[in-house]
Image (cartoon, rainbow, N blue to C red; front, top):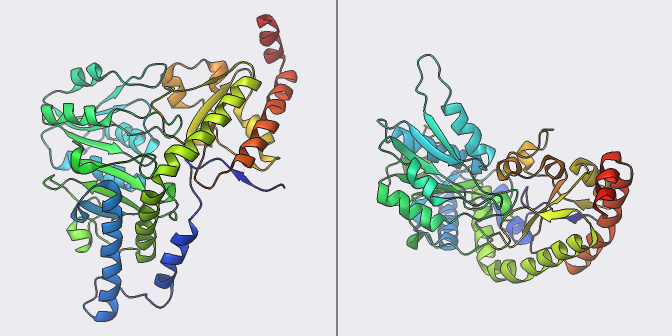
Length: 397
């Protein structure tokens, strides 16, 4: 196989060399428990505190507002379940039709009736053809029974960013908690939570060049919180279980690097993404970008190629060492079209041929050259062997 060209960074990212170096001592000589009273453990606790400060600095938050978790999914579950537990008289959850499965599947499970369990009413807000929300729909949906609004900051499949500041302001006026899944946004765009009306925010380390297995939940100071994992006193009594010190330290270092690389994310990476997108659209007929043209993450493009199967495109790209995705890694085993693209009204003939390219600071112009060279012949070949594709494209001529 040729050199790997990795364009699936919304699924997971490479661990940065600086991050690997930072965590190694805690896999060796610094193995103490940060909760221990002795000096050997206490010195480890100092590094956990430092990581909390590094992450808080990236988010524009206070270190006391950061809870370390195992991943974004745990953070999402902890936030939503806490909002329900601290507002037991309310039974209504508002979310969207394009959320990550960590939120969408949880809300659907909470809506199921069962013997001896509380079930909730869930409103999934629609999006338009560019994956944008109508804030008037949200305002109408909020009522006296609403416990929490959970709306993602940036979509993992299209990169489309929702107006979280306006959403949070609306929720605050209505007296409703607002949680955002910011797993894809953190590290890619500037965030200052001290100036935003967001009550809880989820993130995941492996989306910003830390290892898998660590995440965090921001809980604004003063927000009532009910722990999801019950145990010891760790994380200021908000999440039981001994901290995974190597991973926590890694996340702290990754946050520091993300802050340092923020300008590159929004200049170099954006330029690479824009060039890749422009060249693909120019060379492959019947292709279209899914999502709002401007309100997107700088690293993400989702392109549909009509009349071909996305899985076939990915397999042929893989033969050239190109790694991309047909949507969320958490749903890659499904044969159904993306729920995000369905919610946007993308035609069935295009939804099945959707490919997501998601870049990072480690991608290069030479890698874009390769993809721009190999992809159009792949699309052409697949359409040639598809009778449906041949007939439809011929009818357009």
